[in-house]
Image (cartoon, rainbow, N blue to C red):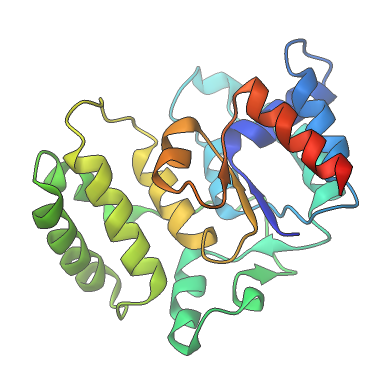
Length: 221
């Protein structure tokens, strides 16, 4: 089973390993995943760990040793490739080896600069207009064909932009690029409630009851 842990799930496992209280269910999830699933780190984890969008700057990176411990136990020696590599390889179809690599570094964060300003440009447009503009902009900015990464990223950004009942978050762009990269390949995406709602088929949220249910499911397999 291939699982992707978003930053919240991974960091709460790391905090449990550090002995911080309130993350016990994530400690149980960590143990349930060991030996049952592969959960690799990615350049998105590096970006969120070393350059967090929230919290004091002096705390950036403090979880890195514990995160390395989490992924050393769960990754099987694999890393998620940079999104640019994954998307470029999709021209020949979807193959899991195009997502995973045995090379990676905790010093190389994801580069989201090609999409800078795009969520703001889409904000408030009706879904159809936002989707069409997102497809056009993503292809022009990246030089990619309309591969699965491009289609899913455009859909996610358009859904976020056209949802006027929800306040945009600084992490929206990162979340969308991450999901567009990994979702076509994984068996489970462990993420937040909002992204789970956009991608319900293979996603599990981070609420206690959801995590407990997933632990029971894993332990019963």
